Length: 268
Image (cartoon, rainbow, N blue to C red; front, side):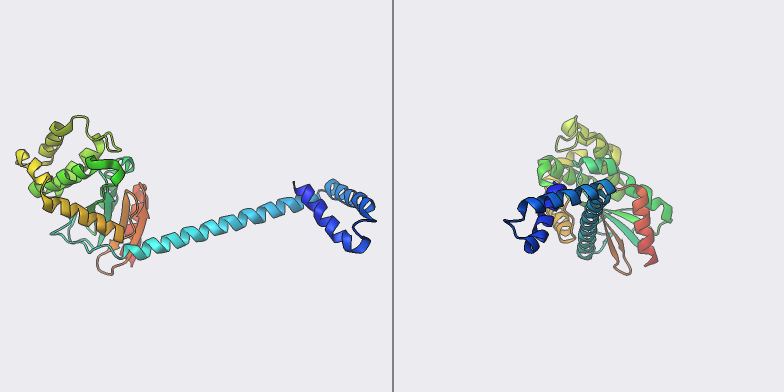
């Protein structure tokens, strides 16, 4: 293919000087001879390789610029996340911590299942200067099971505070079949996990999970996530609660990535 284009280019270059009709045969022979010399010397292959490398570099640069622009957009959107409120949010760790790792989570998300416990592990290094904030973001394609998990987690939190909430949420994530398939043991297993998490009135959980106020709370978390640039789960915003610096982190990243985000937020 490259050889064909080279022939065309050389032919067009030669045409004005010798005439397309009268000198066609002679031009063709001269072009073939020139190409043969270029091939034998390796110059043709080298030129083609340089052209390919330039194209690859242009593509890589375009991809880098696209990623940087996406990151800038996410960082800008992250500023829209509502302020951490110890009376409203489910918080693991020091409620008054300088930095919060805000996690938008879906209890039926397989990536969230893999990510479970990672934020708590990351903040352990900061001696109370960082906490974890859980916000609900059940995805539509995980169906009612994901929403139901969010409702029950919130209801457990009402009975057993944030500590019980995190135990329930992480246990659900550990045991779920994920992708909307839920817990193998159904409602009985939900109650069992709730009791383990510290729920005192298990019989009241079902009514609580149907409470319009709980449903609305989950909807508000989803709306907050969407305003903040969250498009999938887990989505993380690391925020300095004093300065407002907000960093966006996408996906089930390792704890070290969160540690680096907290360190950057603390430096700010």
